[in-house]
Image 1 (tube, one colour):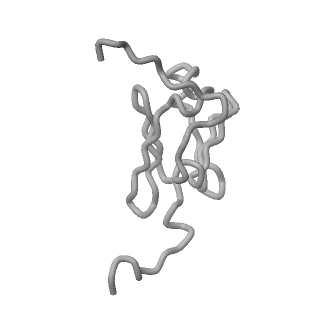
Image 2 (cartoon, rainbow, N blue to C red; image 1 turned 120 degrees about the vertical axis):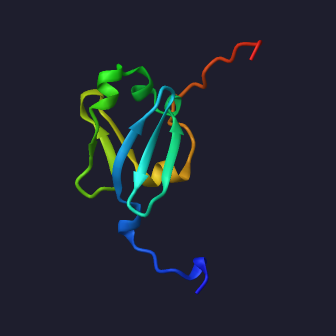
Length: 97
């Protein structure tokens, strides 16, 4: 059986942990994948304090993560699809970089 023929289940994409970086966050999934997104794609998360960013909860169906204090909910499907939320603005890059 090739890897493209392996059985897949919805629980493979269950979030089991979240890692918060300086400018990004990573959703760790049950099947071993880690999906990293830039923080600026999610303005509420970008503007939150470090403490608020660390205060996440996996949603009951394990299909996403909630930051209740800042009213942010990020689903696995959206992160897998990729792309910034409406209103997100990329960071300004210094010309010297």
